Image (cartoon, rainbow, N blue to C red; front, side, top):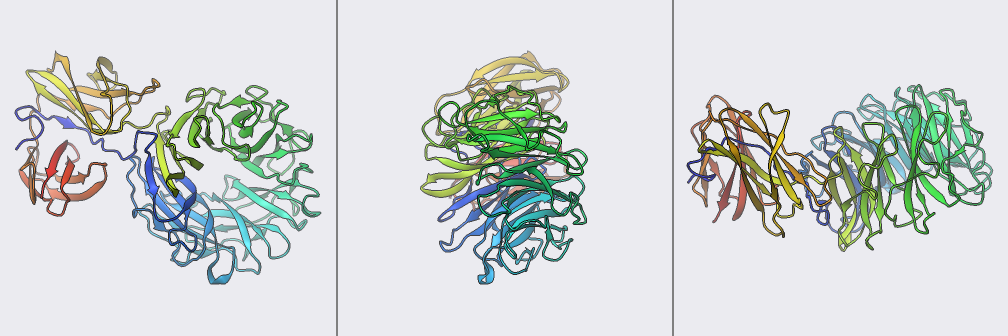
Length: 637
């Protein structure tokens, strides 16, 4: 039985299967294992997908670190519910991650194995989910005492630089570089970042662009609560202190016993550091710039970032691409917490409103910091848990370098599930899409969920198919969306060259959910040569994206057929194209998950064994690299 319109011509079918859920109340589960999963961390995989790492207590006894990778379409590529990062460890937590530059991830974490609390180990995982540094991971330091609060940055050569708070002799900050094999490169047990004092805490670091690191920390040398200074240091790629044996003073006294710093790099090995400060008896955000030799460049003890007299706390910082910085923070001037941002140039001068730029919404707490990463145009992408609808949901906003909000006045929701979400983490891809992960309570205990936002802030449309047929020299476009797609309408566009497109019609989306939705539109113009088509789905907020482009040619009238349908044990595919190529066949279930994948030598008829598939509705993706088709098939045992 021929499936797609017997007697018609199936000319091209784009491979549009995607796993990313377009419904912000549903999203994509990353891990829903027993008990609690918390503290997600996420990075881009370099291919517009992402790797998520989290703390996990699925055995109900001790925390371990797990990881999962998603491709750009939202397919989970590793074991369901994640892979164990370091099977040889015990009671692991507080993971920090960075890219290995090759599609994988380097993870550093605290580990309590061998009844020794808070030791630091690292593990590298490649893009296929293979552990590269043995099951035990790489031990960073075996000196006496404990280590905690690690931070990590890439070294640009497949390894990483790691800093941590160390209790071997007082409380000091140490750092170590590991290469791509997990081997420490600097002094055994780490480099002491600054020799002064005995109360250095909460290090933050960023790459210096030359395989070294820029590190900031809180320094309470005279004892807890008595000094509260912010210091910084640059460590070269060989482990040498560049800003003297004491480091450089960023701010001599913040007057805040809870002050913690954040740091970003400037060109040539300099840095900008930000922190919350209580010097005026109200919390404000300050920042200071150090040049490549560690000399402060702005007002002594820093410049105030926001002129509003209200309270600002918990700042985050990224570079602005021009030796300045973008800083975001939690702000209570409206009587409830909101997220604000400001850009400062290389002189410390604010470039947006002197009172900062509101990102809208309502943050759930003044004590919770936003998360922020640079986009690829010197702007920022910022996420926070938001209570505007009465529930704790995750919102994301994009801000241009000029301070223009890109995703509406209040950002866009990555999730609006009413069960509540906290602890967002974001990855920004090269196409400026954003993958967000968070802790989610929809299943009663804490799980990890994720969602993808396109560069314009929309959720990807879940097209199950998009193809064209010809009848009487006219092309008819057919497309099917997933049941939970929330597009408002679709614009069909055509082109004679595949570059310049014009609209030929609009189709309103079908209301309701629960079943997949199918649509058609016929091009009134006759097809005399090759024509290109694409879809422009538009959501309820007027935001839109584009589908893949399909090509229809009047000269190509061959049909791909699948029979019998329904099928029981074997399905036969008729392949009308060249038999000199290899055919790839993927079977996807109703949720878009690939459950079977085979490669066959092209021939006129190919048999596919479906005897082990459960009864249900499936889609077949078939391609030889040039021709592609998507077919529906029902399995009924």
